[in-house]
Length: 114
Length: 114
Image (cartoon, rainbow over all chains, first blue to last red):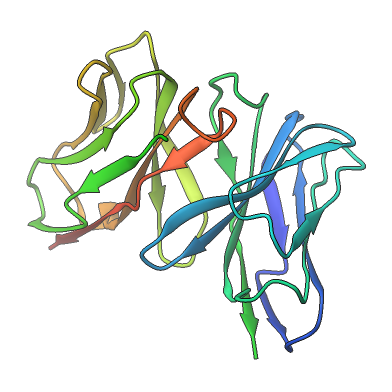
């Protein structure tokens, strides 16, 4: 079945460590996104990518990095510079960015910093 | 800057009741509006997408309307069931948003009691 797969579902990290969250889609979508969700704050955009080898910062990019080497993959690295990384991270994709297309989400990855 | 508001933040109804969830946005220059459902600890599931040229969309017991001029959308759920219990989020995609990406409301948490 077509969809978006995020892994791992749960991740624990010690302070000072970098971690990478995986996002893979088989929907043949050009655009991919990373959102962060915190209780009471809704979803906030971290990074997005319109096409392979290109990505743009969203509203809260500090302390995060991404790559888009393949159309189907958009991994997110949470670096040690991110001051409050404990959150629920959601990956999404759409046919094309800004084209008014429907957005599809993965099941999310919950990161906890110990 | 586009802002999306959802009222009420929480709603509890008895099974079988028809109900309306509200979403308002500050900038009427949008491509589309999308309604999502989120179950606890899960990703978002797309329910309905209304293009800016449309007034409403229907899927089963769900009907979403859009009034761009007043900056409002409603999600009508007919004959509610306990399985409808979830958080419902609306999001707009348009020039007023961050590079045309979705701007989300904080959601309405719906509880349908048997």
